[in-house]
Image: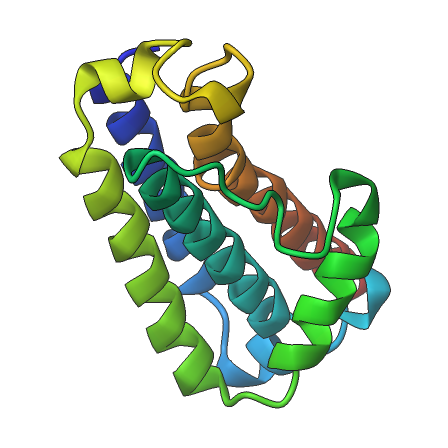
Amino acid sequence: MDKANVLEKMQAERAKLDGLLATLSAEQMCQTTLENEWSVKDVLAHIAVWERRCVGWIQAGLRGEKPDKPEQGYTWEDLVTLNEKTFLENRGRTLNDVQADSRLAYQQLLEQVQALSEDDITNPQRFPWTKRHGLVPYIAANSYEHYQEHFAQIHKWLADEMMQA
């Protein structure tokens, strides 16, 4: 997938998620009704953290460094633990703070991807730490695929709510 398509998918899927979120009240955003007793606010904080991690990995790669993935002290096998840590760290934040941070994190990732060259994004040999996959899978997993995953989760919750009403 080329840079233009990556950017288009990022923006389209984020707009879809944002459109769904715009239909929710502050009370709905803060209800712990999702899997693992998460709220929509918690999901927004979670997405923002992963967007920032992705920006950090890309920036480390551009400096010629190998990033700590997913995060220093954690492996991919620790993903559940890492997500729980992120959840606990962000749980007490206000909705306004999380929403502002979410917009900022998305903007940072979008600008980072916009600043990359086509070669940075698509060349599987450009960053050795991508193990010959290029950046697209990392960008996708931390942007449009992540937005789709949580859009579906929130949409299902809303549909279930409508059925019960």
